[in-house]
Image (cartoon, one colour):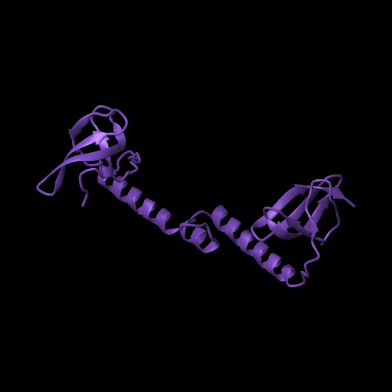
Length: 177
């Protein structure tokens, strides 16, 4: 409990802001009056406002012939699924995907990850550090500062190479030999 002369934070009626105050009077164990350290005004004590939870409102689109309650329910379910999936993984994408092309892309990604894992078995910390003027050959290991370790799958002279990293295939600039 605060005593007379203690410093506290309170809302100042003159400054219209949260400022430092000195307790001037206490009545029935409660702070009654305070003096603002910024403007020196003496006024009743106003507790700091509690922070309200910020609720993000999202516009719900209702399709023709659909009831609003159904659209709101679907929107809530979609938001719940999005909150459950924190980082995109192949398994999470599988649950959400529905079209043939999405399923084909997932299958291709899984195949690429399997190839990368098989190839990394033979990796022995002998990768070249990637830069745009690096000279590369096919099946060579490359260490990229963002993508990590990968290996060259295909060269496209004079200055491009497809490199397979753990997160997928990247086309990067290089010097082909």
